Image 1 (cartoon, one colour):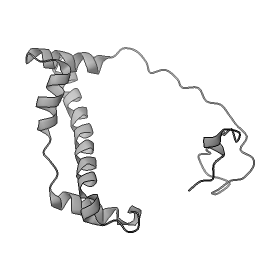
Image 2 (cartoon, rainbow, N blue to C red):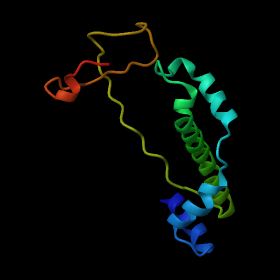
Image 3 (cartoon, rainbow, N blue to C red):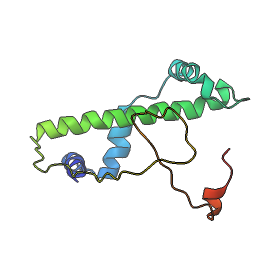
Image 4 (cartoon, rainbow, N blue to C red):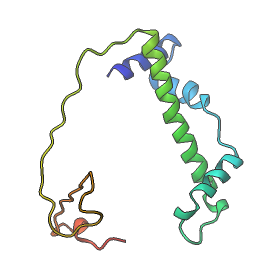
Length: 134
């Protein structure tokens, strides 16, 4: 709520709605990724590329993913700057998230002494949950 209020005030100060500010000012604040950026990303993640897909096939999607990441990173900086500018202080403690101890038994992967155990619950009568993994 605080972040939204700060962004709305920023937009209002420029005579715009939040949506207008986001589309005009914020979206244009991040440059389009270059072909070199996209190629570097492709090379770094080559092992995850589906077989038969080339750089040219994926270039538009890669550029979009890079820009989205830059926009997310930049939004964090914008919000930090606005919070500092307006001396925002949050006095509430974050809520303590519930933890439940669950005995992990049945099929498993990984070492027995792993620091984290993920237990998956599924309903195999559900067509989506019961389908074979790809």
